[in-house]
Length: 262
Image 1 (cartoon, helix red, strand yellow):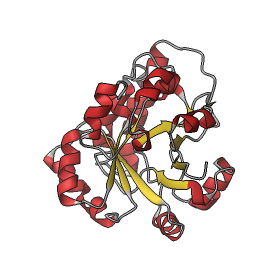
Image 2 (cartoon, one colour):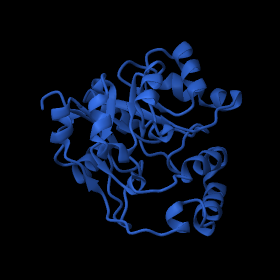
Image 3 (cartoon, one colour):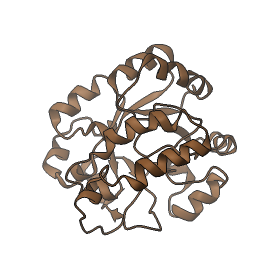
Image 4 (cartoon, one colour):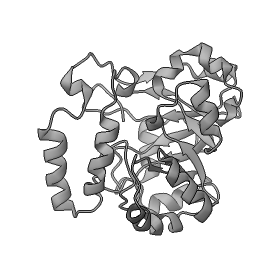
């Protein structure tokens, strides 16, 4: 399995925690040489989604560490919506990290086309938020994206996985959290809209808006509407998928306070 590589989640990491200690704490069995990239929030942007934007997760010092160890930075610009103003506000980030080896995770197809033209050095991966779960959707996405993250539940569909021709362009989850069994991922669109506000306010108002939108409001997540039993992080059999021809895997960090994952 010398050709297997991993993209590692920095979700929930505090910027003050050095990324090296974070990796040693949560992913001690993955050598740095096997880490293709680490993904998480950098500076403020209205294009984030997937999780509410509260604070930066990957600091400038973290980025220096990644560069020294030939690990790419992967930025989750996974918001469903991208206006001209959103793109303008995000340009300083795009310019700062525009370097071969870095990549973006994107949901909005129109955003991909703009970045291809303006910032061609980035590799672009189709987000799990696009819910690409058929051969037809995969083939269509390959026309625009370099690689694709398939939804967690697709890991169980071995018939579909076997039919994928360009397996080297697919990223499978090496482990999974709450999205694996979610019957309706209503949080994706909800978070996209709220992150527009979270990314445009200071820390005080961001905290107030977050508390109102995600703590007081209970109907943004299907688990809150219709609770189901959660079993924590589920580890997939990576050897099985490697034997099928897959070499790219996405790894999540377990949330210590809940039975789910980041």
